[in-house]
Amino acid sequence: MFREYDVVVITRLSDEIEQYIKALLEESQDGQVEIRRNSLAVYFRCVPSQINYVLETRFTLRHGFCVESRRGGGGFLRITRLPPGTREDLAREVYGFIGDAVSHREAMALVQRLEMEGLLSSREAALVEAALSSDMMQGAASVRNRMRAALMKSIVSAVLRR
Image 1: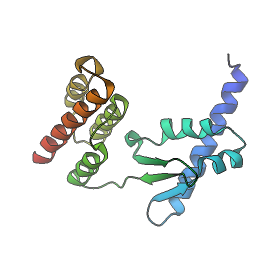
Image 2 (image 1 turned 90 degrees about the vertical axis):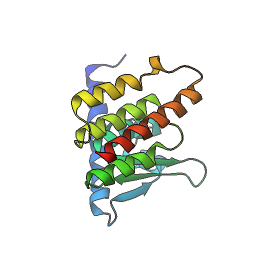
Image 3 (image 1 turned 120 degrees about the vertical axis):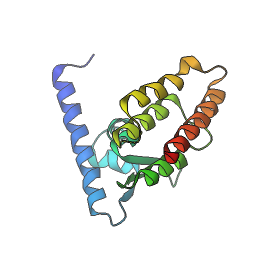
Image 4 (image 1 turned 30 degrees about the vertical axis):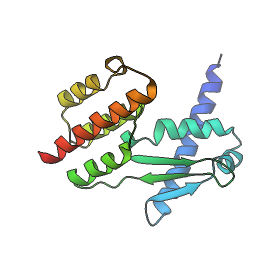
């Protein structure tokens, strides 16, 4: 169990990691950076899972970022700040991100991002979240993720038409 002091230290470290990555993004010409998780962990004297935590909680689609991860010897993390753009640009970008399958967590983040950007009203977002709920889907996780992706693509296409 964490002591209060431990939580403060972890939060402060997470804040520092977040600010460091955002500073790197500000310096980049194209709004993206490639970093190595282990190198960043060594720099901040923490475990790589701390880097994962920061990326999973502070660099999400909902927050306007896309994080790509490539594992292995030449592995890296590519963090991209999603540019503010037209409704159509954002919807197309989200559509491209969905791919053939999307997890429940990713789908909910996408819905929140669409709502945040004004592509969906709060009522529409609630309806979409209900439709994409894991409880509504039948079958194995891989089947549910493919079904969810197909539904998300249909929703984004409808948003583009209005």
